[in-house]
Length: 148
Image (cartoon, rainbow, N blue to C red):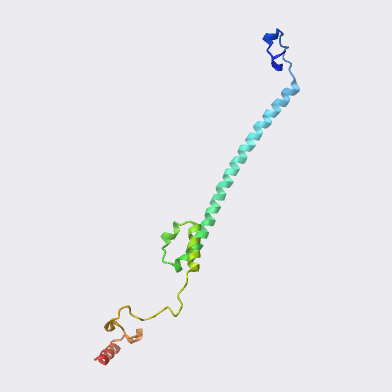
């Protein structure tokens, strides 16, 4: 039994035969090692390409996200009391939720809007429905003369 068969040479008493140089096997091993090194270099090159493309993709996604945020902020600002500082820190999803909420809000109708009605019930503070053209000194004097 030899060491290849699972036994040891020392136990069997036989001497191992001299190593035979197989030039074809040595060439194929050298070729395999060279191919392995070449494949590792190619893999490193592809890894660096993937890393560069991932960086470019992240930059492109950041630009697209900024465009979407700008559009949403442009839609939200006129319809709400948010400030630009409040909205810029929010994510795209939060801005979309705010816009959807504003879309579902009930807008006042013309029946709900009252113009020129004072908030206090004191009649001395009311302007009696005067328009901007009626606020001249002469009109004010006529109005005061009419009350007394």
